[in-house]
Length: 186
Image 1 (cartoon, rainbow, N blue to C red):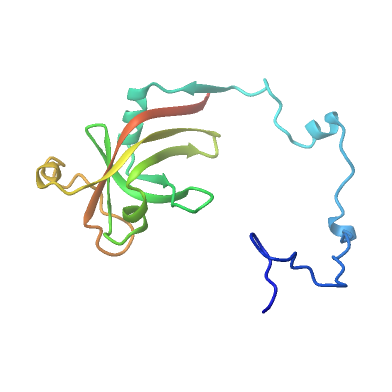
Image 2: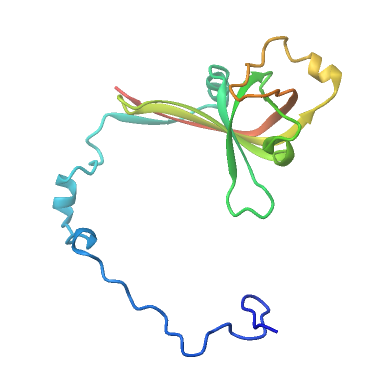
């Protein structure tokens, strides 16, 4: 039987007589640069603290809700068991009574894995002016199946999803924590 390697393997998995490859040498083009002094680094274009007129503001909870209500595209973040990093997917949403409501397909990734706890993020940036805001809400995400609860969502309030296909299942995130940040320039 062949020898195996990995966790719980009987042997080391090493091939007798094999030598690991040596350290590769960088070619001239990608060999790196000499270390710059602090003054040179600053002259090369690094931002200097204190020379900008930017204001950083932590937003109040109600301001965060107001900003979320002004948009209809955000990102839902959730974990899939066994994955090392969270999955983050864009959705078309509506804010209904301080609850984030969006659609999915029955077999969709969000429908299968986001139920439980999820985070939701929406932002707006003006890259030219280098200012903008970001809101992050996290809380319980659940599938809305009760006809009474579905009827309380104002008709036509959910935006039409950009993604193809029927999105006939409704999910909602009831935020427990809502935080926001804004960078503005004078």
